[in-house]
Image (cartoon, rainbow, N blue to C red; front, top):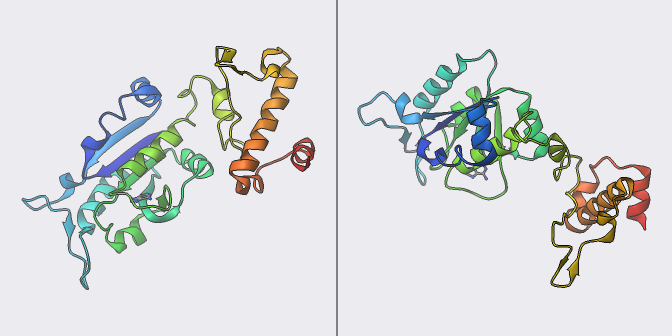
Length: 238
Ligand code: ADE
C-alpha cells in the first residue's frame, strides 16, 4: 500500500509516521508513506501555492497549477493511483470507506489548506473527496493521518494479531465489547465471572451480546446496517 501526500506542511507528519505500529509497518516496508511539499511544484521564485478567489471573499485558495503538477508527477509512479482530496465537503469517512481505499493500493492524498483548492482540480483531477467528520479543521493534514492510520491497520501484517482487526469496532458493523485485565478485583469492582470460566463458547456469546448491548445503547443507527443472526435479534428483543 502506497500513500503519497501532497501538503504544504510535510513536517506535520514527521513524528506520527515514526511511532507505534504505523512507524513499525513503514520500517518493515509493509506500507510506504511519501511526503511531497506542494511548494516544490510551484514555478515562481517565491514558490507561491495560493491565491485570492475570483469574485472576492474570505481567505485564499490553493492554486491549480502546482497541484496539477504534483498529481501528474505522482501518477507516473503506478498504473492507476486513486486521487483523494480531504475536505469537509467530502463523503463521510468510515471503516467501510477505509476498506474500499485499501483495495486501491496507491492513494494520492491532497491536503487542503486555507479555504480549499481551485474547483477545477477537484472536478477534473480528483477521484474521491473525503471528510473525516462534520467539523472544520485548519487543513487536511490531520484528516489524512486519520485516513492513513485506519487504512494501514487493514493492511495484512500491520497489526500482529489479525483476529484483533476482525474484532475491532465496526469490523462487523457493531461496536466492540468491553474488555478487562488484571486485577480481578479493582477497588471492589470485579471482572464478569464468565470471562474467568474458560468456557470459550460462553465467552464468545457474552462478548457478542455485550457488543450488541453497547451498540444498541450508544449507536443504535449502526444496528440497522449490521449483519445480525437470529440469536442476535432474539437478544435485542429481550
Ligand atoms: N479539512 C478541513 N476539515 C476537514 C474534515 N472535516 N475532513 C477532511 N478534511 C478536512
